[in-house]
Length: 301
Ligand SMILES: C[S@@+](CC[C@H](N)C(=O)[O-])C[C@H]1O[C@@H](n2cnc3c(N)ncnc32)[C@H](O)[C@@H]1O
Image 1 (cartoon, rainbow, N blue to C red):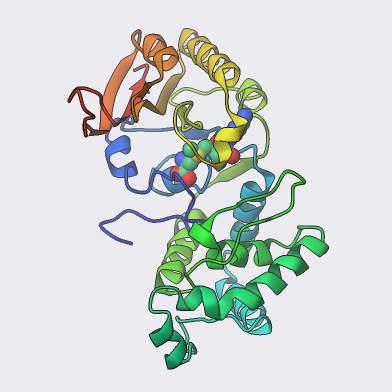
Image 2 (cartoon, protein in one colour):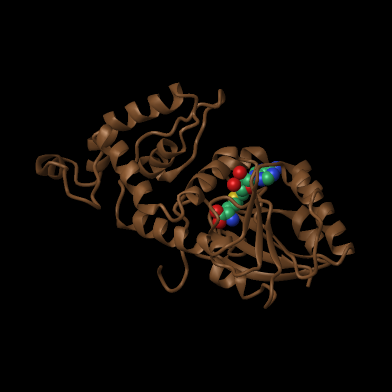
């Protein structure tokens, strides 16, 4: 664990690993339940203490990966042995155990040798995962670890379609898994797999609950932003107004400025609450005035 912050072993695109230290300074000192409708890889819940956790994501693969990992708590060696068996079955490299990539491949492809070495095995593993009905979460976890940018990417027909990446199962992966097992074993977690409206609507809120939200951002680009538009954003903002009227604390992350675009919908809504600047990058364009990237946390307390 670097500087006391744990990285999620899902290495989730757009995770809050680098920002959670700053974000949590704006959280209440005591949290009854941390409620996350958009949990993703879980880098916030991993690094925040609470009595309990209600965690949700609309992506069933994400939730099933968490459930699979949690199911191996206390049986971590078994999990690693099972992964090693699959890795060996597909003849993938495993730099954590030994360096099997031939020297001539490294010399000829100094920047892409893992991708070249693992390509055929990765394709076989991907085909087996798809043909098996995409239920095998261990294979999916390895597809993510050996895949391009550690993404969970599916095509229009719902088939996993990430190409091999130039990465393998290394010490970072093992460390992230060790931290996850250790941290999650100490937490009381309930996992949910619903749309955020359904999830938040079914909770019996208790004193000192905190709802932390990290939705897709309307003005940035990533895989899960396909699921997000002005309607989902509007629904979310009015739902938060409703929580506020009922005295429930919330904190929401968002990006208000990105490459010359502005999320005015969010910005205007947030004027009634407290805005904390989390990470702002003022790289300007020709007129020296446009903010390139500006990330905020908005709280109602
Ligand atoms: C910015 S990511 C969250 C990242 C997370 N904070 C982390 O550190 O890994 C946003 C998440 O929202 C989920 N999502 C998108 N639309 C949703 C919806 N309507 N209801 C619930 N979750 C949704 C996506 O699957 C994605 O995992």
